[in-house]
Amino acid sequence: MKRLLVLLVVILFAAASYAQDNNLIWAMTVNVKMDKKLEWEKKVVAYAKTHLPNAKFRVWEVISGDRTGSYVVIAGPTNYKSWSEPNVSPKGEAMMKADGQALDALCNWTSNMYWTDVDGLGSSNSDRKLNYQVATYYEIKMGSWGEVREILGRMKASRDKAGAKYDYAIMRPSNSGAGNAFISIRWAEKMEELESGPGFGVSDKYDEIYGNNSFYKDINSYFGMLKSSHSEIRVLRRDLSSM
Image 1 (cartoon, rainbow, N blue to C red):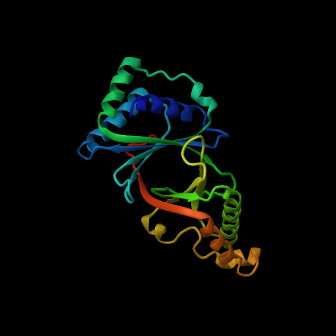
Image 2 (cartoon, helix red, strand yellow):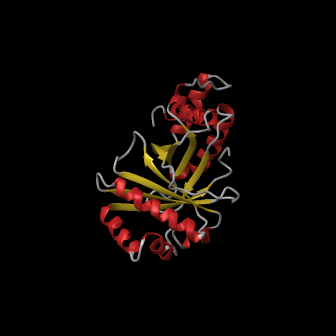
Image 3 (spheres, rainbow, N blue to C red):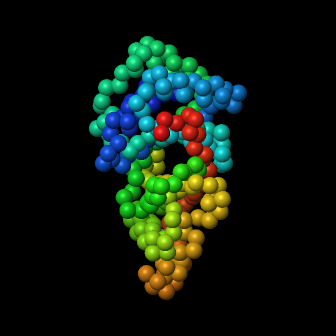
């Protein structure tokens, strides 16, 4: 956790300053000591207001899976160039460092990832108030991303033709994590929307576009390239977020 809050300041400042024409997303997972969660929530809000008054970020709490109870702080879109920009706390470096150390002391561990949003595979309905997200992490066979991306593109085209309304994104790691991985993020306004996945009900349109039995053929091929996957549900903590 050393330099955790220094990194937090750099990335959140970058995200606030460079929000246009970028596709890099930063995500920090924070596992807080169970008996310190309320204290951490109070301190992280105070820290952001005091030292990062212009930062734009969202905080999601994990409510399922192995990381249940952890928080995921997400900022972006941004880019690598923006990280060279100076960041100065209105209260000074010494106070920012002391407050950061106080937050560090409440955590078991943290993990930072940088993701690139894959253009052309996602969908957004910006008029909805999104309160939940399902993050699914995939590990695929080395060298198979090209074929996997093609199948994901076909799935999107089939959903669009079927008129399906989903808010989701496909992202790949950028200079972090396994190179043979990707993540899908699906947002929902209500918990009940999570009952069916983004592929539900599109097989007919898939076959209509790409030929008879194309859906099951490509799905079988997709699972043949998939090594592992795991998912978690997150709820947006608007009380901890700045946007």
